[in-house]
Image (cartoon, rainbow, N blue to C red; front, top):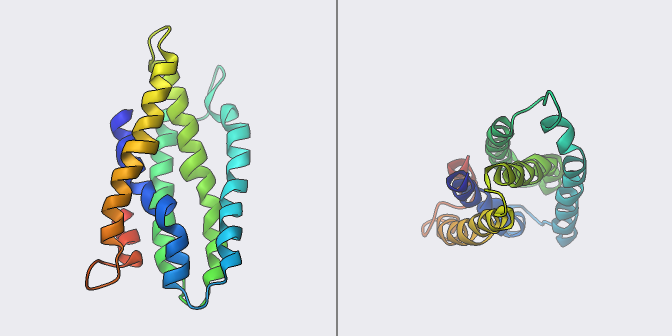
Length: 170
């Protein structure tokens, strides 16, 4: 679980850490209101996932295993990164069609990670497991990922630029 979260956190840190810079740097005349609108779209897409996640993964006959949810999250993140690279530079507003994937790439992943951690924790160690999950993803992986992606996403010739970084992330 922790190694999966570590790798996923590094991959996700390109989106979570540099998305606003990507919008403002790689598109022609991106209005700043689009950055806020995109963030709002991301947050709104999380709500139904957080609300209804248990319907798919719990009960006597769950429709999805937690492992399959994590696999789907990896696939959705790869798709999200590929879609970013396909957006025309003159049409930054199209990013709003991609951002609902955040509900899967973050909210579903987080639900699956927390629930898996709860199941794996020894009795009385549930809080410790949640701290390890949060620390691994939000601190360690995100921090290391942002250092790595910060160098990779630099414009050429110092780096690959955002579009190539997103393809590498996919």
